[in-house]
Amino acid sequence: MILALPALLCLAQHGPNSISIPDDPREPHLRNVRQLTFGGQNAEAYWNLEGTKLIFQSSQPEYPDEQIFTMNIDGSDKRLVSTGKGRCTCSYYMPDGKHIVFSSTHATQPGPQPPVDRSKGYVWMVNPHYAMYRANPDGSDLTPLIRRDGYVAETTIAPNGKFMTFTGSWEGDLDIYRCDLDGKHIKRLTHEVGYDGGPFVSWDSKWIVYRRDAERTPAEVEDYKKLLADHLVRPTHLELWIMDPNGRHKRQITRLKAASFAPFVQPDDKHIIFSSNVGDPKGRTFELFRVNFDGAGLEQITHGGQFEGFPMFTRDGKHLVWASNRNGSKPRETNLFVADWVE
Image 1 (cartoon, helix red, strand yellow):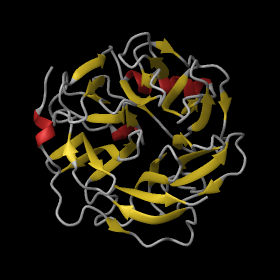
Image 2 (cartoon, rainbow, N blue to C red):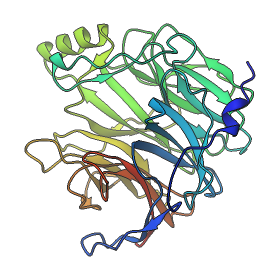
Image 3 (tube, rainbow, N blue to C red):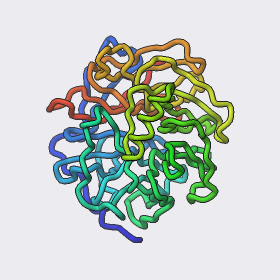
Image 4 (cartoon, rainbow, N blue to C red):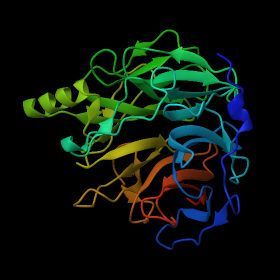
């Protein structure tokens, strides 16, 4: 499947490519904060190996369902690299710099995406139409990697180029898998009932950190299974776990009794940065936190007061990118920010 057209399309944006945001004295680890996107919903921005490009998902008036874009780290040269059809998520650069991967529904659900059924409370959709694709960095030579009868998304890639990891539902539960970079030799890494997902591979490729919604009572298990049958999950209690690339040495990191997700291992291999609503009785405010590998030393990193999520360090640990509601022109607008990291 050859789709070169997206490489010619740029994200419409008026004004500067990026702007400086005043440092917040409550955020001593973040300096020289810059806003890279303006308007819409922008999230899950991830660095390439060299720290020179970002790939992210965005919904805009011309693309109401999320599509995949790339840009330079100063916010310039924003380009559509997905098809513009269906909905896309979970994009990532391959270590060779010559390919990208992302999940998309365009092949089997190309039209407007169905809304989430909010009658069941706050739930996430795990769309079974998502399949994993590989493409050139400009979106050309789009090729399916993994198509299964179920959800295939949440992909991240080991920087050593030996494997990638993702979340799938085709065996009746939401579990984490690994495979070669060509989609072959798939191996299931988690087997417990509940949502195991959001895996991120550390920069040294030695660890996979992920979120887990452990169902604790028969009633919770029943609720989870009923929702999953409708391709939904209720992400109200997510804790962070870590394991090696073969699914061994699983260990729980947090016990916050909150919704904690989007973990990423700091390049020092001593800390994990993540997003959580811990400390908010209403569960609506998400901030970035950092914790030691042993679960001790919890430290709040951001103080945005709304939503801060999807953090990722550059390989040298000097820069952080994340998504935030701060400095939005409209309520609940989510934009992308980069900052120098100060230890």
